Length: 136
Image (cartoon, rainbow, N blue to C red; front, side, top):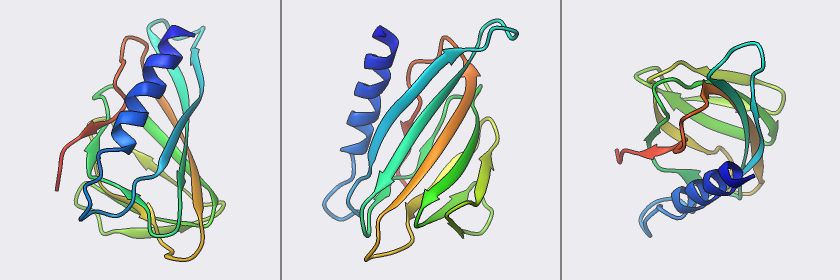
């Protein structure tokens, strides 16, 4: 429970880092945090990311141990990982972030409709900060 509170606080702080010149920040909620019983030292954490119309997140990294599988639940998400071109993913589509990737763009692709995604992290259990802002 304590680690869930720490994670929620870290994400809340991250979601508030967008400056006035940036898009509005999204809402980030840790929805589960579970050690993987057959892989000692690894955990699976689920994060719900909700973007209002026109909202997005600043460029960021995740822990070097984190493998991330994201599924768009509602609306459309514009995402760019590393130097790949930005792509729009619609509800039901997914993308992967390999360990050590830089998430250059993560934003709602619409200025009029909300968007939500579920990001599932597999990472070292000892990791506390799931998002490391980098600027652009």
